[in-house]
Amino acid sequence: MAESQKKSFNVKEIREQFPSLRQQVYGKNLIYFDNGATSQKPQVVLDTLNHFYAKENANIHRGVHYLSQMATSAYEDARKTIQLYLNANKSEEIIFTKGTTDAINLVANSFGELLDKGDEILISAMEHHSNIVPWQMLCERKGCILKIIPINQKGEIIQEEYDNLLSNKTKLVSITHISNTLGTINPVKSMTTRAHAVGARVLVDGAQSIQHKKIDVVDINCDWFVFSGHKVFGPTGIGVLYGKEEILDKMPPYQGGGDMIAKVTFEKTTYNELPFKFEAGTPHIAGAIGLGKAFEFLNTLDMEAILQYEMELEAYAQDMLLTFEGLEVIGTAKKKTSVVSFAMDKIHPFDIGTLLDKQGIAVRTGHHCTQPLMDFYKIPGTTRASFAFYNTKEEIDIFISAVEKSISMLS
Amino acid sequence: MTLEEKQQDIIDEFAIYDDWMDKYEYIIELGKDLPKIDEDLKTDDRLIEGCQSRVWLASEFKDNKMHFTADSDAIITKGIIGLLIRVLDQESPENIAKSDLHFISDIGLHEHLSPTRSNGLASMVKKIKMSALTQLAK
Image (tube, rainbow over all chains, first blue to last red; front, side, top):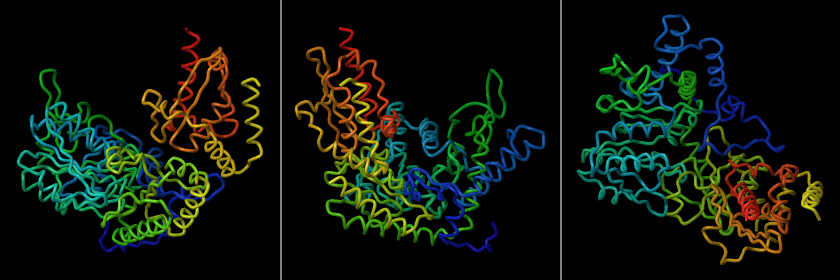
């Protein structure tokens, strides 16, 4: 996109581009506050998917025919769009995966092969299960040691504890950029610098940050940055692993199959170069192209203004919720955005969630795939409202009255 | 009252509500009224862990009838448990094993019994049926 193109942000105009927001559930206008789980899709992404299957559908990287070349170039253009959006140095550093979970598993399996017994991996206490379990499996396989960086009651990583845990045994640090349960924005840039100082590699889980703020992987300087397409207004089943070329080159292939090979004989197979080395088999071609379109859409928007707006939405919702007696907001970090999680004395999140649903409001309830975090706060789960730039203060007002009504019914 | 009559009874009771919130208001009242399971019986082996809410179920076989008590940490789940127990309690193992609990979907609450809902209710029904089958096999 040309730098000269004007970037803007107008909620009303944005909402018009999301057809799924214009519907009623149980006779009420839908209020979609479950963006942490997945985002809605703009019309341009839907049109792109439709156009691909209607006009360009072919397999990529292997056909001499017209359609295959069209599909290949659309797929590679999407990679390029994403590279530029992330400010990565090369498009070879963008690997298409199924999503965040798949990307983390790729690193755990491939980079994990380079680790030895006794090597230490650090994650924080606020991680999603997908940034816990792959490392636990790696530790079981290779005899590495998983260490947990503690958090304080507000839901912030205790930076002194992080420094204490870092040592020359630390080989990898894997942290979430923004917590899916708490909304905490972690200082990933400074944490990366400190990890690098002891020779450790850093993976940043961007599943909850890519849709809220501008990401510059060179500025963060992390070794890997991973996210899911569906949370950033793209299709499901597609995601991205960004990795520095230098480290991706050292990593052995993860899955074997077509497209990832240079030459196969029964005696010895040589592998394809980046990024294809990590994209075995026919990828989610339409998904990748749709995701590229989602980033083109974001390119027209002023992400700074969006971050500001979403922080205001979150603060507004949080302030209103705190007026309810017996309600505790879980996660009150100084730097947070887009997520407000709460728990109540004597009222179960499932009950609130069920009643909100019947009032047309979609929230998430439960442990949000962060069970260790729930144990830390000694609660069974929370009710979580998570916002996107198409949400409004008016929707929050309706949400607050619905919460009030639910509480009065349940008390 | 037969098991089928009990189901019809509940369907009739719910017929007066055309608003979802009224329906849930009634379920919440049922949840509040449900006699709680004896605290001693809230043991891990009686716990049905759902992703969303937890359910405890205790069953007993006396005078050729099954007897159930249950509890949940979520009041809506508890209200639905109350309905299930009203239909299934004091029934013979044969009746329970072959029962078709259509009233749940008739009153529009089938989503709560879907195995993907993971509020423990689907597992609870499965467990109730298993306990009836276990009695039959004895």
